[in-house]
Length: 272
Image 1 (cartoon, one colour):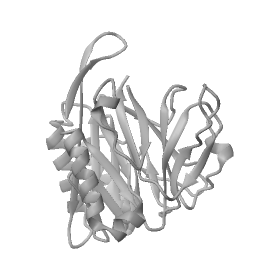
Image 2 (cartoon, one colour):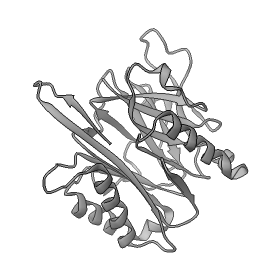
Image 3 (tube, one colour):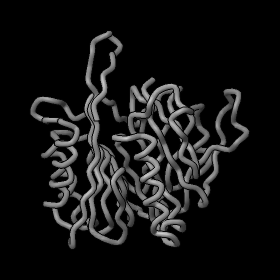
Image 4 (cartoon, one colour):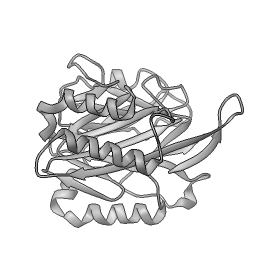
């Protein structure tokens, strides 16, 4: 997907973004390289000419032993070190999903500033592992709204390097895009002033396991509502749930958060 905007100096720039999801019978660096190449081609990004500004890389748990080499492979293919992501049992993009099989899901972007230092007005996307200490004191430390997923995997990575157990949860922003979250339902386009530019989806794992067609129906609905919109997500049987703000945080107050295991979490990014 490509869309045009203006930066702070009133210069036209073209933001590019795309995803790719691949599965195979066994984990390999060739699978990582093929998934990254697929996303680059779909986004029409040539790393030799267009600077890749950020990468979301989700890998199945089969890649645990290959993680350092997988990150290096992604860096070489994109000429970018800003690679963030996690290991997970289930992966998805806008076209489908994979569970319990070696797979790679990647989102690559250009002219979108993927970073961890969220602005005060931004909605921070939190990606935390069960190995981290995720508490409300950390979540409620500022006025920015934070939503996200607590995975069952202890393995996260930021800036192309695996995170340590003592590191704080990974909080990402997508400037100049602003994130809006929804739980359980997919909002129709009529609810938005501008069309979303990307989406992140974290399904309820119990729903996926009890009804394999439920996630297919949800992805089909997303494609109908938002054709061509890049989407990436993960789901994990060991996940604690999703980070959601409590309902009484309106009127500009400091958000208060809780962990809910009973919701799908859909995050749509809009141009500010």
